[in-house]
Each structure stands twice: as C-alpha cells, then as structure tokens.
Amino acid sequence: MENKKIIRLFKLAAELMELHDENPFKVRSYVNGAATLELVEEPLAGMSQATLESIQGVGKGIAAKIIEINEAGSFAELDQMLAATPPGVVEMLRIKGIGPKKVRTIWKELGTETVEELLEACEQDKLSKLKGFGAKTQENIKQALLFTQQNRGKLLYAEAEPAAEELLQTIKQALPDAKVEVVGDVRRRMEIVESLQFVVATDNYTDACEKLSKIDVLEQDVRNSGPRVWRGNYSLNGLTVEIRLVDDACFANEVVLRSASEAHLTQVFAAGKCMLNVLREENHKTEEDVYNAAGMAFIVPELREGTNELQLAMDNKLPKLLELSDLKGILHNHSTYSDGAHTLEQMATFCRDMGYQYLGISDHSKTASYAGGLREGDVLRQQKEIDELNQKLAPFKIFKGIESDILTDGSLDYEEDILKTFDFIVASVHSVLNMDEKKATQRLITAIENPYTTMLGHPTGRLLLRREGYPINHKMVIDACAANNVIIEINANPWRLDLDWRHVQYALEKGVMLSINPDAHHTSGYDDMKYGVLVGRKGGLTKEMTFNAKPVEEVEAYFNKRKAGI
Ligand SMILES: [Zn+2]
Ligand SMILES: [Zn+2]
Image (cartoon, rainbow, N blue to C red; front, top):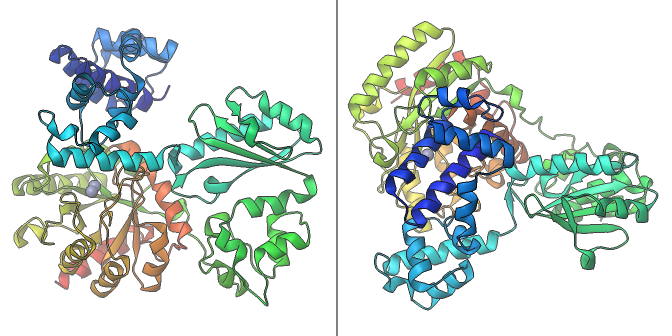
C-alpha cells in the first residue's frame, strides 16, 4: 500500500477516536504518528518492525499497525471503531467545517445517522439549536452537503486516470485479442471524471460481454447494458463504467466519437459539414485518417472541445502544445518555514535532482498565521539561508519569493521595505472567500495592480469536488494581468487546477504568460506539475507562453528587470 493510503488510515483512526470520545492522549499519538509518517520518503510497505521503529517518532504501537496494514489492508483497532460507527456518520467526518466533536453531537444528540438526515435537520432548523452550532454553522454545513450531493460518484482526474489505466490492463487481459482504448472524460483530460469509458473492437459480442462480466472488479448493471454496450461499476472506486463494443472496422471512428465533446462533433467547419458527418460517411483506420478525411490536421483528444480547434486545424495552425519536459524550474513552493513538510534545502536539492534549474520558494505570508506565515524577521532569516544555499548549490538557483495573502481590500501583506527584498511575489487569496463577484474581482485587480505582484496564485480558490471558488469575472482579471504584466499561475494541485483550462485561451490571446506551479508542500508535490501541464494543453498552452519553461538566466533577468521598473 502507498504511504499516502497508510497515513490516511491513521488519520481516520484519530478522527474516529475523537468521535468516540477516547482518551485525548491516545488521539494525539495517532495524529502525531500520521504527521511523522508524512515525512518518510521510502515506501513503508515491506519495512520490518525494527526498521519502522528506527524512524524517529514512530513507536512500537504505530510500527505494529503498519505491519498489520501491510498484511491485511487495515488494523484491528480501526476495524472495531468502524464497525461501531454507522457508515453515514463516518461520511459526516468528510464534511468541510465540522470536526469529529460536532459530528458526535449530531449523532448522539439528534440521533442523525446519515448525511441525508443531516441535510433534513439543517432544513428544519434543528442543527442551529444544538450547543456550539448556531445559524451560520448550520448554513455552512447545508451548503457543503448540497455541494457533495451534486458531486457524488465523481472523481478528480488524478484519481480517475490511474483507475482507468488499471482497468484498461484488466480488460486487455480478459480480452487478449481485442483492441481496447480509454475514451471519455479521462482521454479528454477533464478535471473531474464522471465515468470510465472504453471502446473495444471485437468480432464476438456475446463472448466479449461474458468475459467482461467475469472481471471481479466490475459489477454489471444488467438493466442498462445492451448487446453492444456493457454498463456497470468499478468496485474499487464506485465510478460508473461504460464499455462499447464495436466491429474492428469501426474502431477508430468510435474512438473519435467517444473522445470529443458534443460541441466538437456538431460544430460546422466547412460547407454544412461537421465531425459527426465525417464519422458517419466512412470508416477510417486511424484517428489521424478521420481528421485527414475532414481536410484538417489531427486534433489531440484534450483539444476536442469545440472552442476554436476545428478552425485552427483547417488552417493548419494548431499550437504546438506544452510538454512536461519543456519545464525548466518549479515556482510556488512551501518549506518548513511555513506549512511545508520539508526544509528549504530538502526542497531545493530534490528539485535539482529531478533535473530542474531553479526553485521558487514562496512560503505563506504573515497574515496566514494558521499556516505558519512568515513574520518580517523570518523572511530575512530565510533569505539569508537562500543566499548560502545558492552558493552551495550553484549553478542551481533558489529564487526568493513569498505567497503573499491578498487582504480583503486587495493590498499585499508586508510593508514596502520587505516587499522589495523578494525576487518574485505570488499573490493569493486565502481568507474571506465569500465575497460577491464584484468585490472579489476588485480585490484581485487591486492586488494585480500592485507593482510588487509578479504572479497571481490560484485565481478562484476553488477545491474541486470540495468547495466552489469565489466568483470572479475572469476576463476582467485577465485583462488586468495583461495591463500590469502579471503572470497567472495554473495551480497544478489536482484539487485546484486553477486557472481553469476554459480561461487559458483568453489569457493567451491577451498575451498573459502562465506558470505551471505545483504549490508543493512536500517534495512529492512536484509530481503534480503533470496535471498543470494537462490543464495548460487543454487550453492550448505552448512552451513559449509558459513562464517556467524559461531557462534560469531568463527568469532571473525577468525578475530583475521587473523589480528595476518599480
Ligand atoms: Zn495558496
Ligand atoms: Zn501555496
């Protein structure tokens, strides 16, 4: 089992103990255990009891439980607590804004055991009357519940893509002679995936369907299946699965049909012709042949959205899309100076060892006290360490940055004498997320107009499937970035993916550069850059318009020139 999953089990155990009102010292030991494990780089699976105990902060008890998890996928104490808790109550622990103590009150005092009952209790104004709740908490819980209800059965791309890949291999094993391709949301690189879809070429539908139904991780929904389509669920994550069976001759056409948006298929691109007509006219051997027959250049699945890709393909002007290997450095990262898990030096050497030329460190600013934001003294201390590390690690370079909170009036978080010590400043909103569109947009624009702002961080603050972002007028924000020469980040954390790909094209039209930033709080966070690259590609981003595709000298010159202009 991956470290992440093991850690998640310990966190769940801590929450359940608190829910069951266990000894606070015991709860703490689990919380601390999980925090310690987050710092371990090596895979915990396969380590012996003795090796585990040799890790600082890991005691006998935690070590034994890791061994148990490796053998059984869980540990007895956790299983006992889960058995003693209604599943709906466990689900409540996932609701934003309420901790185990409040869930306990809801469960024990209202007798509410499912999230549906909880929503009803909110609507009947029962929750606000409980001790420690109030009308505001009730409203927040209600909104969070409605949001989750809408998003049930959906997964983040980062979780769905490996699941699709695993299932693809399983299907190929079950049908070794068939051609199989992943299609649908995953192939189009949608940020949220609603179903896993595949196309299978076969000459024996009945036999193929039978073999699919024997795959143990798939549960068929017989009522919604037909002779040419297998529908059901992937038992490992509950996502719906759709497998379309076609003749070998129709395979390429079907793959195009199932890996494109409706707008892409129905948009007229020449003399009353759309892609649907092209697909119906004739079967083609490859996807490239389909687009050839339409008289245009090949369009990759992530661009098949019906924006302007058909016209560009007709004119042979499709952009050469950014690749992960084009990136030269990693900007917007956190260290132990604020809420990161690794030290500045660890973050830097890891980045260097991955082959990058530079790291931009941007810990939280002083207002973000909940995230260990840096006070003025800390900033200067960190910058001194950066100078020393830059000597030691040259030619690798660490740029001095900060993720400055954008305060409610749009101002940045330090006085000018501190602001001017940074090479670059990422300006982000982290608090008061409930402004209306007009106020939230103005707040961002004020920050963008601040001459010290180099880059706008996660523009909407959204957390996919968990929290809607604050509403902003994207065009106005992008226009302001263009006017003030401010870069916009594509925050590559799979929960954020913000700037959304739907706005990338407009930013490019306005000449605004984008930066693929992992917002890493851990060395493993660097791996998220691949998701940011996919978002950029989906919006048509090229290497030329990607700020961190620039080599170190150019980035340094850019920061210097910008600072000199203030
Ligand atoms: Zn942030
Ligand atoms: Zn950050």
